[in-house]
Length: 603
Image (cartoon, rainbow, N blue to C red; front, top):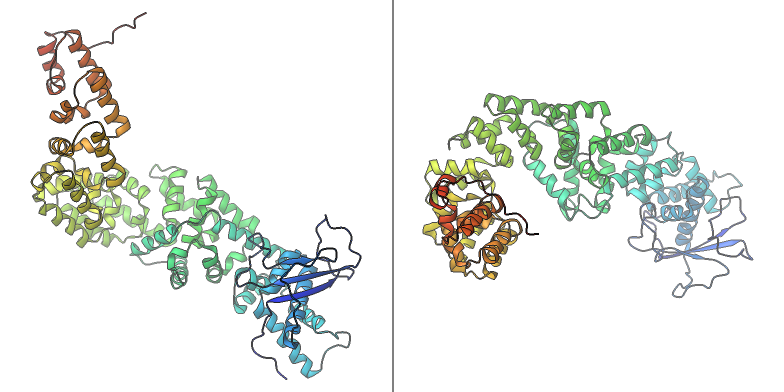
């Protein structure tokens, strides 16, 4: 009679193992006394997701050791398995003993025996078929012995069961890897899986950042790709099809199986001769261990690269004056720079910017901070460069723009033109828009809805009317890309705390918009404290002359204050600071040398 296709696995299994048998006995903790009866009973409680001892500390919820000298725990009723459950029990016990004979630890062997149902079903079906044919040797009388015999005869030495349980592979994938790793011992394969999992998934949860970068890398890829990149994109597609999508790329539970299925060679590489040298090379480039998983998950084939190939491709970037640590940071942002396709496109990008007469140093700066540019075809870059050129930005000016905001090159022309139209809608002509682009290119790489309009709303909230916006933005365009919550609002609150009203601050911003660009600790606080405590002037003085904050406290404000104090002269902040040195000397020093020294310290 043939066996059913699927075996029913009981939720509670009890295995009794004779410790005096020839098998390697499961190790009893050293603090137990010698048992009067040399047997060990294992009561195994199956959960839906038992912890994997190969990579986690096992949970007591699925593994209980029962020793004759220990009282049986509560809530573990004895089971009455039917014939099918007895076969499952015997098969699991056979796999457990077989793995322990191969040197696998008790804990790991138990996990594998409980979590390789497909492998076990193959063995059980094989035993039942041979039973029907009546071809067993006479000495193999028990079902467990027959399962164990077949496990040995398969010749994979337990690797298929391990790969199914610890990695989650299907039988065909597990058998394929086992066949190609025939020279590897099971213990060696276990160590290799642990090592691969460590370098790909060590560290805390990345919160979806690796997946976010993967999407960005794919979005800006517009060149023909090589086989390694094609395999990487196929790997991404498998993860994207799962619940949670690419946000789960950094999750070992969601990703590891598909990583091995997509790149089975990972388990065929030598740890000593290949994997470890690659890891050490990256460490020498300043890549920390916890950051390596970003590189390996975004471009797994890098682990297959020959060190000489990696060195040659890294050297191409170092010709720009980049150091190892610079290239290391680039790898974390965009590990595809080690692929053949990106390396070849790198040469095309350099030639393109050379024809555009963009300084080599500016190109290197742009690539260092935003290496995703190297995934763009030169035809894609050309369209964007032409749009920037329409605003009078070319050659050296273009170099200044892309070195400050290289992501601007990755914008779609339509999105860029929308920002241009937005700026024109604020009252700027085309020439002024070009000037603002040269001054603050980040504006043209920003989102209109999420960034630019939010800054306009903020300015309106403090009392800057629409009619004053062109003056405010032209004087300090950086306002449009300053962080509202972490930069602008705290500075407004600080000034209000010092006694200024919203109306005062709005007036100051209209007259001197860089005001909100100054650091509280480095600029606003020390200069206000000097004004109020040393100069003993009212805070309203800065309302009339907010440019006060733009002058150096040590080089201009203090020296001029000391001159005026020495001559007992009272004047406004504007009269004190707005004049150049010559004008100040003529008016307040009667032609004396402007060089002022601090008075000697009183003894």
